[in-house]
Image (tube, rainbow, N blue to C red):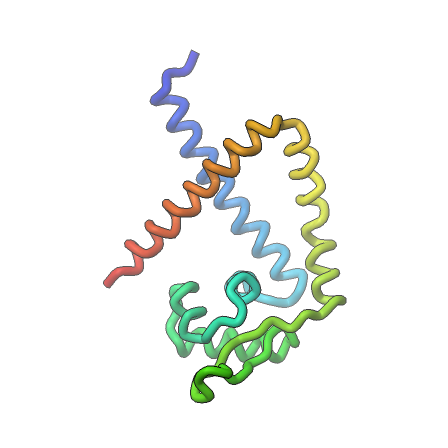
Length: 154
């Protein structure tokens, strides 16, 4: 029987492997729709925080404003985002995702196999287990966000 220390180490290794595979999965989906992984993740951030300024997007991505401008230009050319004037400050530009049914449908189709497998796995869990997993993942999100902020401090 494994000790608690061994189990914690195994869990750490499992989380690291999951993280790596998630990045590779994102890269594969981004490639299928003609985006870089950074562009694809930027779209996720834009969609979750809409509308969002280019400056905030740069901060969220950990990129310079110059680099984020290039990403926004490519997303705009791909028809995924549009620049709009901030109604509260006309000098400021916000990013708004374009709701394109066909593009969204393609992305959903690419995620469908993983989503179906995940949903089947989740059905094996009790409601109590699901609540525990949600709680753990929310705590991991908080820890990861704190770690990113610390790593980005100058």
